[in-house]
Image 1: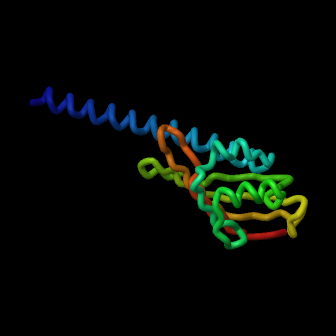
Image 2: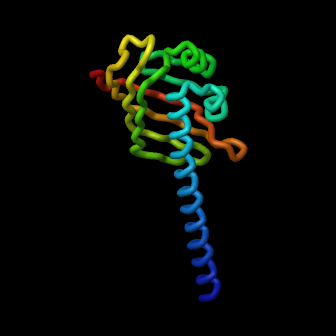
Image 3: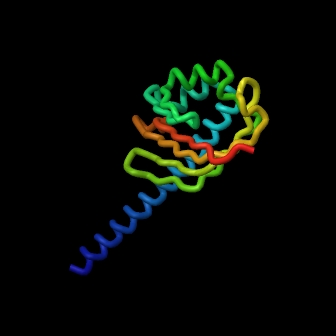
Length: 149
């Protein structure tokens, strides 16, 4: 009986360690994807964004409107989403099954056609990544402006 209990305990510990390593790996990957998405936005790289974003993405943007994939890409192409600087601080990543929820703050400096050109905008964000067929894609996003200086 003691042998069975010890084997069961070892199995539980190994399972827990495997689970923790898998989540740590996923967190590292999500941080890399967050950075890749930020850099693609900064560079206006719609090809990279096509790989990172789900075609079904839903965005609650800082202008208080809900937009979809085509509208995001259109705004980038037209220069409406166009920054001289874009910094992101991730404060929390939570995993629920095949979903990663990323929360934090961003500081951007818009350029070109924005009414806030060259102003420092600080906002809070939430990005939702979904894993399908072993691939993480940005599926939902919300951003709220908290200050403009």
